[in-house]
Length: 354
Image 1 (cartoon, helix red, strand yellow):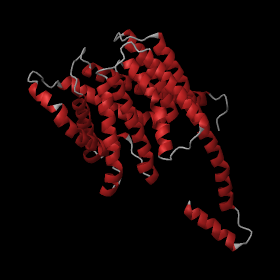
Image 2 (cartoon, helix red, strand yellow):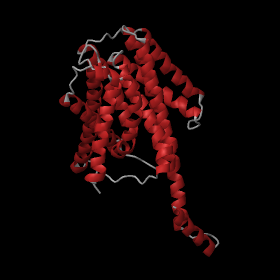
Image 3 (cartoon, helix red, strand yellow):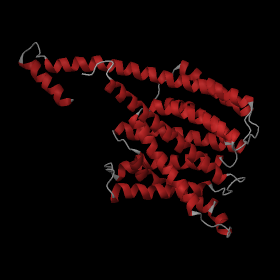
Image 4 (cartoon, helix red, strand yellow):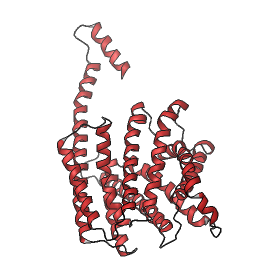
């Protein structure tokens, strides 16, 4: 065993820290890129291609194709065994919500600044908790609800101070938050409860084609007629190809970050990313960020930080309760029972069930 001051131990710990920071940096960079790139494409003052359904469909088609190649052709990832019945009852509703969430969130970039959208996204814990309580996946707690109200007040103050407030854009972003929160709760209800876990590649393999189908119908009525009349439009393979690749890479980065570190690390990194995006939006894109904006988001940020802290403490308490139970269970398997053969049989049965 290495001593406390062993250089090899210190070197190993340092290497682990550096790798974790590398995963965080990659995720922040890709998330940053996708958000800014989508804003660039959709904003009428920039690339001026205001077709959010079409952009989302391009992403889903690209991700579906790459996921199919990785799963079926290159065999890089093993597919999850899933029946058509399970797919229809679990994946289809999740895909429908995901398509609506992406459609509305991309639409919001046409009307709102990047900084204000990030401030509105602070409502995600409020939506997830409220829907979790509604579906009885979360227990109602007055202290947690007070925290949710504080986050909502902070976002409300930020909205009040928004220089270029657009009600339609706000409705689109709030709708996106609501659909995304419902999707996250349904994943827990429909998939996790059945013991099914999907990594980003298998998620895209199953969900992306479903999203593509759901988006096709509104696209036919909303955007296809306009695109058909716009004879001047030419598909830019460089812009849309690189944008879609960034979106696919972001899904892989999420898997690496959570798999190699933790979901808590991702939450903390998300806060850093939000502040960086607000600073970028103000300094580079020249979006207006007012002191009231920052004060309101600061209040919401403190509420989100407290919520994450409370979740971490609850997780630690749950893990601490598991360890004595596991220790007692292990003792029960190792030590013979007082009733001789009967105790040993019980121990073997316990071992078989575990």
